[in-house]
Image (cartoon, rainbow, N blue to C red; front, side, top):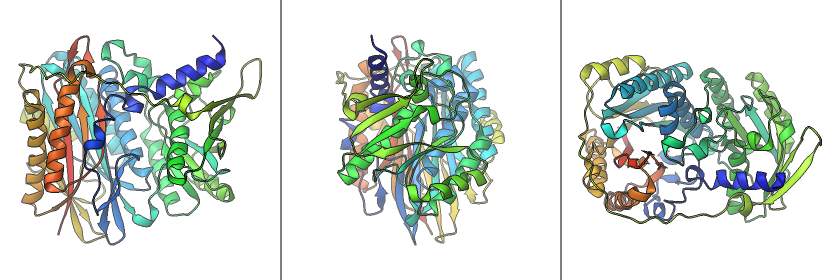
Length: 512
């Protein structure tokens, strides 16, 4: 097999993985109501954006880092926090709070994994200065071989400063900024798209919260300028996904035949003799792709230099409709490989039988008050001075001060607490109603929802997933509260054993 064919097939495999393509769920997700007069940006970007009034908006998103946490609990959970925060500030928003939702097994390993994950979440959030203002934890034997770590984050942004993850103009710069690229995390997207018994520890990334803090500040400062036309986090499938996503979004917005050209030999590295596949699929953390206006190149690079961040131009936006990489080998320099976008990013679907969910018999176990207290002692939930109600008082809600608009942000959350195990639709309806209950208790006006839908192997979980979507759609339409962002995590399974359906909902609203 030729090197060109090997590269193309490997890249297409990564981009058609469940984690990047949503191939098992993308026919069902459009059923969810996503529009509303307060919705500036719904699903399809790094985060949803809700209009708060007076020129301000809220970015909101939730993500999962389940497989990595099971393999390396500290690093897996910490990089989950870093990833969700980048989803927020890549939109130009400054993160003001986060939540974490933990599901662990009841055996000895489950307890060990819990504390590794808690320490990872605490160290990352505390170092970067974003308060962890809420969340919950449950135990169940269904998670003995597949724990769940879901993290939500929120950020404030001036409406005029919102940045989208797109490329719009042929000739614009592709600027790489942040950590150097290594072999850590290569294959992470594929790992999250398969049962855990096939996963490898090498696909788990390592974190650097202090570097992320610099990246956060630089990107928020950049959002105050008119120097760029797009920004994209290098998350799942790394450089490949980010450099193709910006072009694809730009093609949809401009109707132009946009493409991207990437010079891999310009990418800063921390490992030697990396192959093109390793360059493109590495998921090294704390990296961002900037689509910069060429006339402002020097100012952009100077801004990053001011924040002590390494940045360089690694490519450009083209008008040829191709995804082109230029790379070196030990024997030859400047090898050019041009591919059509539909070759690199095939439009794939997986249609699974929607079988009725078979109830598992194990009950949810709530943590002891001591465990909850010990967890919250690890987290800084007051940093930033906005927290009016955090985990210091009971209730699955938090309240943050939005002095910019003279209002309070009410954040409520709920899992189904095991109810989806018996009836997936009633489980998600229970979670929705519980979120709404806290909003009404504080006399808040609900504005939007983000969700994380954690399910097992699609072969036995898609029926439960479809019922969950039906229930969430019905409640969203009934109360006119749109779903503005979210995440699906499948293949939470080991061998033939899938986890129980485990949806998590987060609702945000405004109160006086």
